[in-house]
Length: 540
Image 1 (tube, one colour):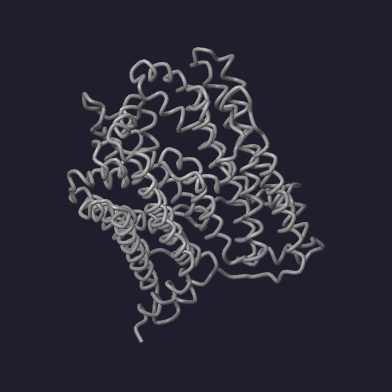
Image 2 (image 1 turned 180 degrees about the vertical axis):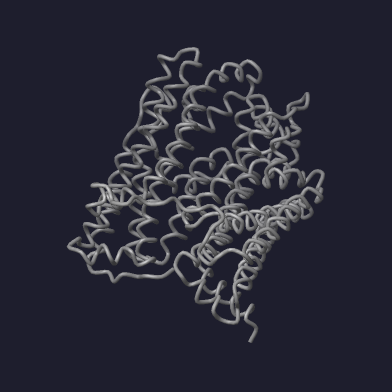
């Protein structure tokens, strides 16, 4: 029996659930979103309005794509590809870290290296596994677009762009696993690169050169630094050019060569970047299980809080562009208001859109706290804590408390960033209460995802990571961007993000917020109670 084949089957068996959730979820999202676009923006005049608005305001391009005409396929590619590629990138980096740095951190890689598999074949198996997963993802996305009614050639080009972009992130994930000593560090670096690639692409689009009719944009140079930008450069459904994907494949080959060069000389468990030395003695905060839970999550909190502060600063400082948009493209102002807030003013809709993104950041931070509890259990360190007089229910309750604290800190950072940038507004005194209300409105939805992820951890511990990220990812796409994509109301209403009590008029309806707080508290309570008699589930 081939050693490489055995390793590949082991990876496929281990990831069968998570990969199925990622690939099928992205495919269903692509199909549903295209169907919604066809239903909502079937009229070319409506597509023209949206593209003119996005091109005139520029900031909207950061969250969308590269406008390339009003053709239905090109418009769908503009609406969807960047977000689909973002999700594919996260899938790829998580997959690679799971089978490389995490294996070394837990000592399993050393056991495998002692067999005829050696040190190199497991990395080869992980590379093949990641490449095949992205090829399957590309085929699924292409078939979803064809099934939704789009033209076949452009659909296959989109699928090829998805696959090539994902393969580039597989290579980036392999390189990150060589750099960092821990799986948390490698995952953090992978997420940072994926999000950074998304933002670089967005900055390039926003700084690009628009056509006279505001229906096309030639991206600026930052887009060419991003694998997602390379995928967009194919111009699917219009130019259908595949040569930009050679950039993704070329970078992948170079990074993989570097990875194997490092793998052949690096000590098992070592990393290119040395780990930070610990203190000679622990601080007083680590004398309690709560202090330990806090310490394990503080670095994650800092990263998410910085991102939230930047997003809040961007939201308030760019609100001055609202008047500019109104003057340049007055015929599409009603479209933005309807898409982002119903009866909201244009400024309220703009702030609500940005703080909805911040709500996603806070929810992701909460999910990561719950996932950290699962990682502690899987690594066996939770068992050492629970061997002391710390009860299981109290241990999980402390993780919930840490989750609540990090949610509040992330939202407070966004609020402070928003206040710092409010001076750029024409009416800063009106913007301050609006920012405060929008930040507070994200608290209930974050509590929901914290409670639900902890409940998954208590009931289905081995599914925590896959389900946790999948739930928040799908809910974010459907709830925040569903209205812009024209998703049906019943689908949008399934997302907790839809019911955040953001200011969208003279009155703020907190009824949905109170319900979400109740749901979050009930889910957390059920998780804590369920933990009382559950057996610990160590291992991945």
